[in-house]
Length: 444
Image 1 (tube, helix red, strand yellow):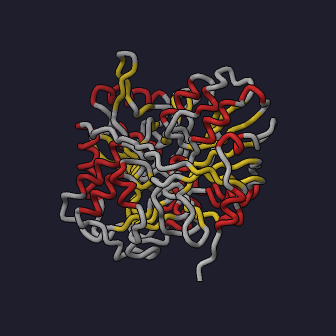
Image 2: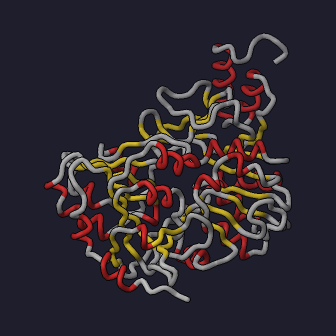
Image 3: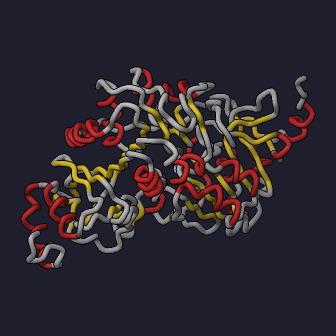
């Protein structure tokens, strides 16, 4: 017997202006994650920003400009804080309009339940289903924890939001205080840059290390996605997926018949993830697809869960690594670029998995203002944030080779990393490693 929610919907339906009027000075307003961030509410809040004081907006991986922040370019009334910067949020940070909140992504639901205040939460969802639930779509992450903690919960529905299967992936109308009908506007898309020659070379070095039956995690960026594209045309079979982010290349891998999940220990025959960002083709793939399992980020990212699958393969990017193996993946000095995200937790989860492997990949050099520099350095640049400690780093890959740092001494690590640096920088790195006594006068 299906329950009718017509009366409750009528009572809770409101327009964006009325929803924005619920925000008071001093409030913590939660915008949620990625595809789950509101748009109509954001524009309505922008209209009344000048009447408010000390309002804090908290979000993560914004995929559209935030109107409420742009309406207050001197941050006199509202400020924005993010757990992980998207390209847009990075530009906001450069303009002093956004600040970073450090975290390991897998801890997010617990952080909300234990430490984080939420006065008003506004989340974009799919329209209510016949059982009274508003589905979070491919932005499950920590949204259930938000709705548990928030004093006021408002949903902004969008008919274009994919409906996903999984756990902790929806909020019931009985727990919602307001409903904004958002129509059916297109979801924001994230375009992956095409793989460069360096990306392809790194992918060619990693792909042979991945056995049939492995369970893969793919991070953000052209380099990890190039690995997926290469695997799609390889003889590999029966791959599983347990990942943080669902990306377009995983659709390609599945459509090529390479993913079955037959050897997974958790969510067998399903691809597990916590959020997605990509093309409309990918969103259509995720919509009502039983082969895909969307869980909260403490389900996908905590090492204790990751390690339950055998042969976990984690592939992530870094921006800089020193000769002892410290990997920096989220900042350029004091300039925040992204965030810790799930990198450290997947590195640890993969290593704890039976026969698991983690790969930190990076181009050997970068260019800035016409100057080329090495990403492999004798010591970390001043103020750079270390994302993955040297004790956790396993495989490091550049276009010049692949090395495993596990079990290696500092001199052995230095030698190994110099061997995969760009040839133009190896002599300097060798000299600096001796100056800093990373390599001594012994057999190394």
